[in-house]
Length: 130
Image 1: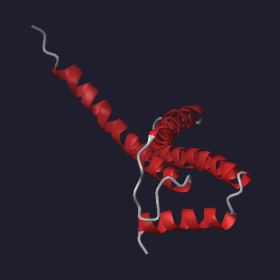
Image 2 (image 1 turned 90 degrees about the vertical axis):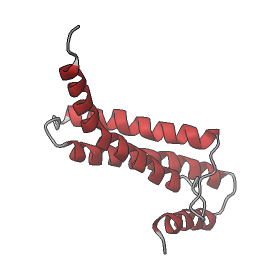
Image 3 (image 1 turned 120 degrees about the horizontal axis):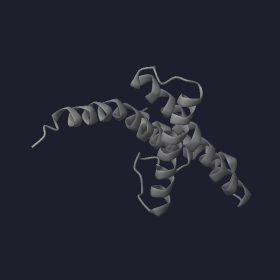
C-alpha cells in the first residue's frame, strides 16, 4: 500500500493558503449585505432566499474577481493575507455595486433618500457599535 502522506500534506498546505482568501470573501460579503440594507438596525440578518443569493454572489465576485485580478497583475507571489485583502476589496465593492442598484430601484419605487441613508447608517452602527 503506497504512502499518501505527502499528497495529503500538500492538499492541507494549499487549503491553509486559501483560508485567508475565503475568510476575506465572507467578511466582504457581510459588509456588502450591510450596504444593501439586508442587515437591520439591530444588527441581525433575516435569512431568506434573497439574502442567500446576494451572499453567494458577493463571495463569487470576491473569489473569481479577486483571483482574476491577482493573476492579471502577476501578484501570485504575494502572501495569502495580501491576496485575501484584494479579495475583500472585490467582495465589498462588488456588493456595493449590487447595493447601489438595489437602493436605486428603491428610490425609483418612491422610497425617500433619507430613509435609505438612515437604513445604512443604522446597520453600520449596529455592526460596529456606537
